[in-house]
Amino acid sequence: MVAKSEIFEIHLQRDGRWLIDSSADSQSEAEAIARKVLNRQGVGGVKVVKETTRGNTAREQVVFEQTKSTGGSDKVFVGEVDEAPVCEDADDLYGIGGRQTLNRLFRTYLDKNGVTATEVMHEFRELKRLVDADTLVMSGIGKVSVLQAKLYPEGGDASARRDALFGFLDALTDRAREAASKTLPLIRKEGFEPAIEKITAHAGDQDCAFLIRLAVARELVQERSYFAKLGKAVDWATPCESDAGRAVADTFISDTLCNPETLQDLLGTQQSLSDALGALVSLTQGSLETDADGQPDDAPQAVAARLTDLFARGVLPDSRVVLVDRVRRQVAGKQPLSQAGGDDEADALKGLVDTLMPDGTLLGGSGMAEALTHRQSRIINKGGANGLREATGRMLPIFGDPVRKAAYLIALSESGLAATIGEEIAMQIEGLFVRPDSVKHIVRDDRPPNKKMQTVTAVYRMFNESTIDCTLKSRIAKRLDELLARYITEDKILDRVDDPNRPLHIRAFMLLAMCSPEMLPEGQASKLARQIVVKHLRRKNFESELVAQVPVAEKERVLRDFHVQLHRCGFMQ
Image 1: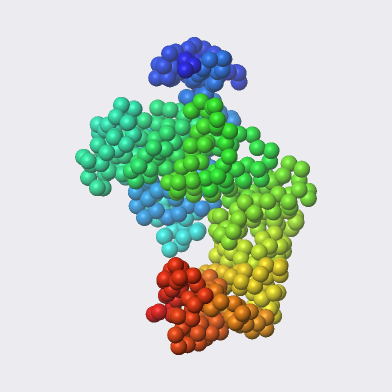
Image 2 (image 1 turned 90 degrees about the horizontal axis):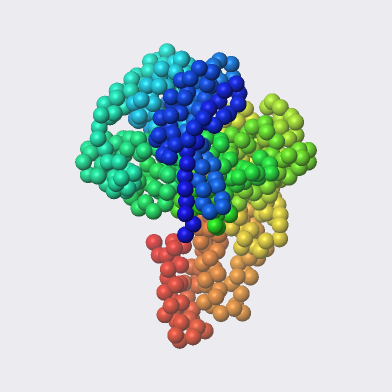
């Protein structure tokens, strides 16, 4: 096995240039030296670079970085937020909605100091540093309170929201101050799951989750590199079998994924924004392809591979929310999807739609539908409500399949754009699913009859389960059922299914398939098929005739399967 060696270099920034100052054998020693170097006259920043040598290869990684304000471009500022869910109490700030808001508000501060929102809320020293950082917290609270009063007037005016938020800050501070003196198992000594088990065994129900997060925060705050934090959290989560362990790992992983540079390290160089977004979607779906073979465990490719596996296992719900939200914001943004621009933008959008909606479910739901519509309006270079209306119509051919079109329009009707272009959305729905005279005008390709019926039924169920206007929903359901019944009658579907030249057991199973919830909705269309099934069931000696042409060894199984299908289709109730 090739030996590995590590050395920690302390770099300082002077007059805009980075210079090597000294080195140390451990990260803790290097960070202590770096903090002293930062106090020197004329030094604007310090960082610790870990150099890992394995055989003939060496890899550098920034594990600590800190700067001091010198005015101008070094100033830390409060970020812009366009949404901030109203928290009922301070504990809500620990949740994904609260953390996302904090991560956006204090992004520059967090990145500059190499800490995450969760670490700051649990480590008293870090929380105090943030509170003491000029007017950052006051400005952030002011910005959020005004936004919340505008978006959620039922929560009170801006002054009431501001008082509530300052109350939450006091509660967080008191809790972190009290927790600072608590002795908890050290993860680096005990191991991740054993430490959590010890905390769980001794903590009360209310304190348990907080203390687990505190123990992890104490461990990760020592790392000032977001990628190093991510690597540790992924390593803990990969073999973890406890719900509490997976949940806390997800919390910290999701915080690190809010850092753009961490995502860039994970994904590597991408040719265009559409490629980068496609890679992010693949990561959330657990299907990102990584070149991890032969890479050291802490290499970006290896970390990305383990992270992809965690997403595939479905154990990172908060992290998935963070990545999907980032995709949504990038889709809605102004950066071109394609480097070439022009016609390539439309092609890139189509490819992105296929990535976001491989079947009848749009990743990101209503928010993503709104983002895609904004993106299309930029591609056609038309702004305002008229541009969004035209963009909605231009999006539909991209989706192709009726189920995907329905999913997009339903999601759009549930988005913020409904207030602006709700009539356009309703008009498009009517044009696609109420006005057509035939199933063949809805499903225009050459898929077989059973697939046509399944497609229209899937559309029926999507609208039936949606939150669109009840009157429109009722009209759609009635019309689709009428069209399915007409299609069955005019194309003699049941005559072809119940062909006397076929063995009875084959005809019976095909007729039952016609009565299944996936094939036809309950209504006129399914009634036609059910009448024929009932007619067969009432025949004398039906079961004997059913298996007359079935091999003896298979008769019992065929009868059993037939009764299972009868029950599933509602004939045995």
